[in-house]
Image (cartoon, rainbow, N blue to C red):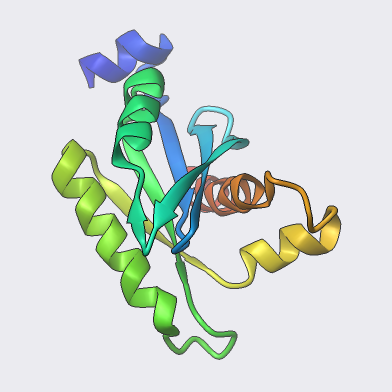
Length: 144
């Protein structure tokens, strides 16, 4: 907790990074528990589902999050889809590599929701999807 106080100046506030996992790109957003807001940061490349770990490490070193949030995709009926297990594996890898709490966030159609509101050719669709995932998680967990 002392690290979090030093980082934000507020004992109850923590910085979080949110991820929208994909096999080719992983969207990343940063959020703040005090304000329950999130901002799109960037997209990290992935090759055959393997993330660019050095870039993720750089983001974690830069933002010094107290926790991470990863969107776990499901079909609209709540059943698992092929990416569900891959996203869960990414959660375990993050936790093992960085020793931070990793919170799964149920998500359905976050990329689709973003794409329907912006030019589908934009490079920041994945980062905006991560922002949506993190924003939703923050709003659910800061109101409790």
